[in-house]
Amino acid sequence: MKYLLICLLAASVVFTPLSSYAATTEQPKAAFTRYHSLWMFDGTKEVPLHENIEVGKFSWSSDGKWLVYEAKQMDTPSDSEEYDIWLYNTETMSSTKLKIAGHDPQWNPADRSFGFLTGSILCVVELASGTPIIHQLTGGVSNFTWDAEGVNLIASASATLFPDGWSHPRLYEVHWGIEKEAHEMDVKVTPLHTIGSPLKYEDISILSVDAENFSWSHDGKSLAMMVSPTASWSADSNMLSVYVKENKLFIPLGEVLLNPNWVKWAPTKPLLASIQGGGRMTSGGVKNKVLTTSTIIPNYKKTHTPKGFADVDFDWVDDEKIVVARGRETSGENQDKFKSSLYLVGLKEKEAVMIVETPEGSSDGEPVVLKDGSGLRLAWVRVDADGRRHIWMSKVDGSDGRMVVENVFDVVWFGE
Image (cartoon, rainbow, N blue to C red; front, side, top):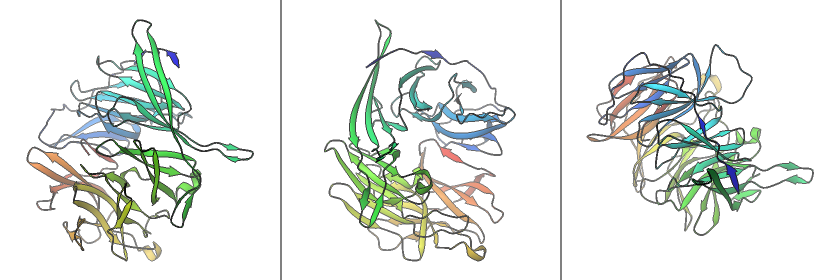
């Protein structure tokens, strides 16, 4: 199908940061939120980017030159569920707001373009000229991701409730391009897979309503996703699944919560790590959350969490080692709050090794393994006894740890 090309030049609303930013390639950098503001840590100092906003999702471009983020002005009440979408340019040190509000911006892994949703309409923004150009592709989309090459997009359409029951969620491949002579958008939507319902894994059965939180294996052959039931049910139980594009196989792998950071592929092998286990987590109660690795074809599953413990965050060091945030299971009763420390899990070892000594009353979590000029670094968030969150960094083995940023909320590292 063809759509007229909708090229909307974004209004250049420039927001000047309070501090200058010097680009650095040696030190890991992060974007983070703090008290209704968005900040950057450039490896040496903190830089405020945008203040007096409610910040939603934010992420780095593949080259680290742009940051896209969702924002709502705190002093401008709005009934809209959509966010304004902003772009921060680290070279010009300015922000630009798109003319179309939306949600879920996702960078192309191969170039300076990104997709987002406005309602159920899938859009792509090109930045090749330096000025954002918006293309509206197709509607009826609930969630999406780029394909592994960054050429086309994978879109999901959620199931719908009819008088005789639910329909099934579907996956599509969205091909798009521009016919320059006719100045038209050429969009083709190809069905990939209709997800069965209910999905079953061992004694677990999940009603399939939507597919989200997509991630590709390193070789681009397998697409992991979470298949979710109705909204209230999805807080307790969802099905981790993998679609193998070449074989057109859809393989359920186990029960998970809707946390996109709890599913990650190994750096170079078709090995998927996840934190599995149903049941929502309360303010203090955490149990039945186990670190699991799965091969896809053939499907083989192994758990790495000892009995009586729960794992809540992790990241790969290499194909054989994982850093995980682990603590003793808690019920949340009698102010028994869950606290975790960082362990190194060797996939071929029987026992994990604690690599960071967590102070009494504190909790270490959200580990991220990063590359810098000297090799690998480990970053994580330490929650102190007063509930404040601080960014720490060390060598990948946990040595030489130091706090680098105080009082943060959400953190996204470039390159994670």
